[in-house]
Image 1 (cartoon, rainbow, N blue to C red):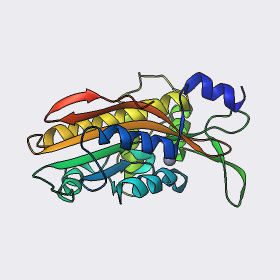
Image 2: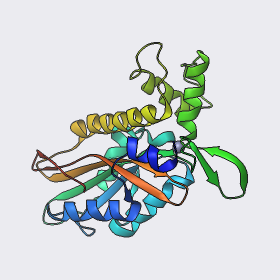
Image 3: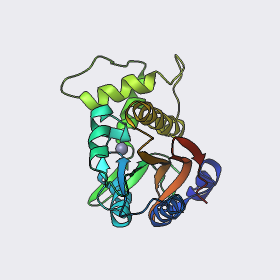
Length: 238
Ligand SMILES: [Zn+2]
């Protein structure tokens, strides 16, 4: 399959990064969120090729709080979440938090999933590298799940994602990336439930997968919603 076919099959709707962030901004504007009264936070991989979308979020919402580690896993926990909340503007007695959850995957022109080109590197490079390494271990049938003090983030990633994969199965990178998006969303939601006071704050969770295409980066939109006065409403990003 060529790039176009893979995209059509697995990510039938994609937007440019600017369009995705703009659409989410405009959708949230309807609910009273704007760049003056809200703080944005992100769960993105550490990979620099992921940070094009962070730059756009920064441009539209202002500087964003980073809640994530390798692969975009939510590792900042309740402490990180509370810190981001404490930095939120307090306008008319209310706070507004915006959370972007966007793990990433590369697809090259031949439609090969997980491969991309990087500046100054002739060989094919991988993205998400952390997820690819985890898959390598799974495929070899030998997985180390002890917490390696010298490799904390990857150890935590493996432990957490293993819980979502049926015993003995090895997903492909596409499925693993979709599982990862769901896991990050769930872990963030779990912490949000414990930490957010919805009597004084509204928040939104906007998720998707960032795709490194041969020409540029795109976003496939996934679950997105807003919580106003404690009431959840789905958002359609289209
Ligand atoms: Zn990555």
